[in-house]
Image 1 (cartoon, rainbow, N blue to C red):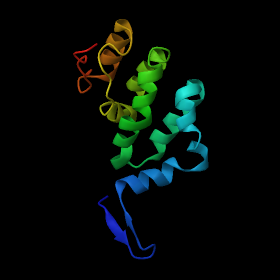
Image 2 (cartoon, rainbow, N blue to C red):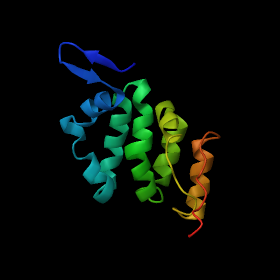
Image 3 (cartoon, helix red, strand yellow):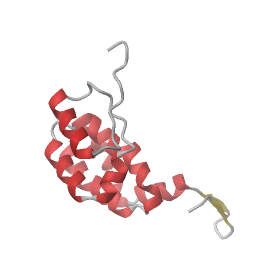
Image 4 (tube, one colour):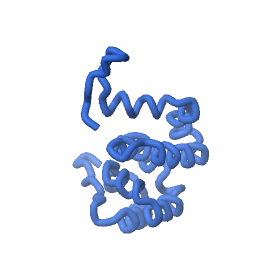
Length: 130
């Protein structure tokens, strides 16, 4: 859906505003907090958010909360991530937007995730100062 001006609300409707309207629903309000301190609570909320957003907004889940989740908890949730990549097309679309730098997770975990996420997913190269 293209950005447009909503005469009734006298405001612009953009991808960001449409995503925010979903992300700010009461059931998703704790997602950001859980991403950092309670990953076992964040995981199901993340999957609900991914299921809720329209197709054209899936990428925002990938480059937002999914990226944060994988960078912080990918090693602990590698089994769940692999399973979701096998079974969930929307997840595979979102995963392409995740920035994961080589060396962020243990090498065996990175190898498993790269294999599970498919050809379109690539690790970012290590930074020179690492």
